[in-house]
Amino acid sequence: MPDLGIEVLFAGRNMARMLGGLWVALRISLVSAALGIPSGILLGVVMRMKNPVTKILTRLYLEVVRILPQLVLLFLVFFGTTRMFGWNLEAETAAIIVFTFWGTAEMGDLVRGALAGIPAHQYESGAALGLTMPQIYRFIVIPQTLRRLIPLSINLVTRMIKTTSLVMMIGVVEVLKVTQQIIEANRVAHPQAAFGLYGAVFVFYFLACWPISLLAGYLEKKWS
Amino acid sequence: MDWEVIVQYLPLYGEAAKLTLCIGWMGILFAVGIGLLCAVITHYRIPLLWQLVRLYVELFRNTPLLVQLFFLYFGLPKAGIPMTAETCGTLGLALLGGSYMAEAFRSSLCAVPVMQTESARSLGMTRTQAFVYVVLPQAVSVGVPAFTANVIFLLKETSVFSAVSLMDLMFTAKDLIGLYYKTAESLALLVAFYLMILLPVSVLGSLAERRMRYAGSGD
Image 1 (cartoon, rainbow over the protein chains, first blue to last red):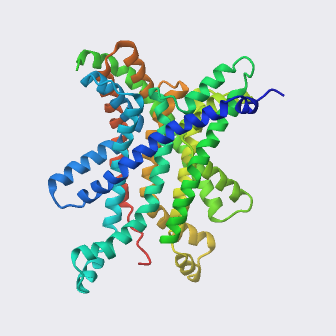
Image 2 (cartoon, rainbow over the protein chains, first blue to last red):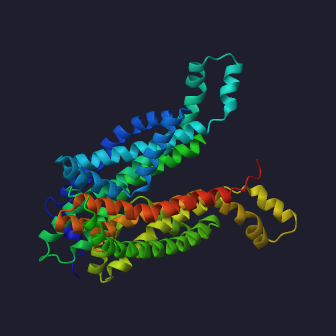
Image 3 (tube, rainbow over the protein chains, first blue to last red):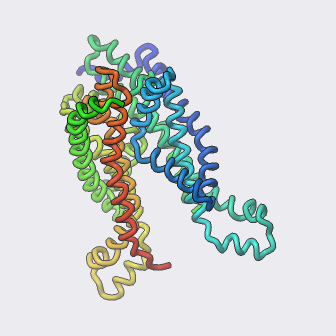
């Protein structure tokens, strides 16, 4: 029975290298989430303003970022800026810029939705009880919004982790690229290794995202 | 911007868009089928099958399409299951989409209150009648936003097909940039073609959402 990749996976430092590659992708998504979530909250609040100019501008930004595939955005920033402005961005920097922009848009829409979901009578009841505006936000609106928002933003993080696998296509050496290198290096001795190694990448991504999804699902059920 | 170049590139992008659309819609069609089947299985908790479906849905919802495609296209042939790039793209999209659609359909079936089934039954409808005439129309109405969001998501996901050497829009753009260095023109066409594919779907989706908003029972 030929080796389907299990032997190669555990040989030498192969597994450690693959996990290192996974960390490169995870790092990009975590940095983008750390930047994108706070700015998304800000965007969501701005989107709730009644000013027509901010309304149109934020809407436009949201639609443009969300309608294009993330890979197209990556290409635009990575290849486009070099050509148009002469910037020589590192692939990883380009990826962080794109995912932050995208994450901000997605988070902004979640925040807008969560704020819009608080019925007007909540504000009015608070005012009728004699609460001031800051008190209404502090004790009534923000706690309810957070309960809706936290599971959704945790889900956004898993979506970011899944989307960062695209950075391989602009040349970041992450888990898929490392795996390709390992397969190439073992081409002669273990020609069938691709099955097990790509299977392992599949499992790695699943193990990275699944617990986070479970947490989001648990919180959603608990707070709804 | 060099317009001559753009005119020259147009047919190449047209071909690529055709491929993207072909595989995209085929994959989505299969995804809807898989999703419906899985949703019914989980909704009625058919023993054994139900657990398998949960496993499948969790596996494919928590991994990126790119990794799935790599496994299907480069991994499976080593275990004796070869496939062409087209089959691989369609299958990958169908499996990914199936798991998302299953989740969307299941939650819209769950969103119809049990009271609706009970009321229909007490009016003398059979189980099937209650499902077809009362539950299903409301579930469809509730499910439209999630469904259109999934369709747009899946069409966007087709952009990774170039990784398994399918000559789609991304592949064409990258190829042309590498060959002739007409970066601005290639990227502009890329964006234009994706907008041409995705904007109509997005607009139709919001129209359908507005038309189908009739289920407001029970509140």
